Length: 285
Image (cartoon, rainbow, N blue to C red; front, side, top):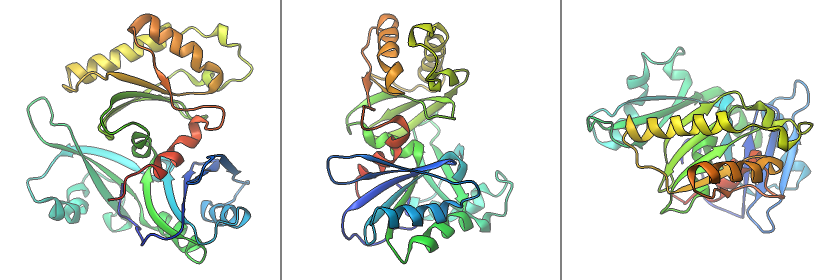
């Protein structure tokens, strides 16, 4: 994960996922229960994070923060021909024409991607507003150390075993459904699948869902990833969906793709809490 604000290790860790409407925290100790802190109207994330720490008496704990999509952007480009340590320093220059803000106001990091169809090395560059993240650090520094920050889609990859080549179908309330290819805990490809906000609708009976369009979109995405991007087909499927629809989606996928997806969420860990858990399972680097 990113090295933006890493500090020395001490105490036990808490993973916290920062979304636009709430914070979701998971402690390192078992049993792992989710603590939800909704943001009040007008409340700033830094204020909410401080209030959560104080309410849970987490002073002195190591924090691992997963950033929601409102905190970052991603761009993909050919990997410049230079050593990795030099590339990390050169990212602002590489991204200068691709962002609409002064690069001095942004923080950058990158991950390697599988080579393109022509064998070209590629990278995914993630960038965030420096002041926005610095405000979080300043607010909690009197209380806790922020061990690391990362983005939610990369945090999710830590939930799979290191040797797995998986497809993850993830639905967070208020966001579109996403499908992600993961291999050896590395993000390879993701696609937003629109039109499935009804999965969040608790008033809609599960037997009213028609999954034909979802299955078709999944097949199209897999065909694109394996055909155009030359990625290996996933041999394991994982679902991070609301519990009430998980079984129905598992059945629909099993009938068409002849594979039984495994659920990453359960009665204690909702889909929206999983990036926080993923931060806890990140291997130290």
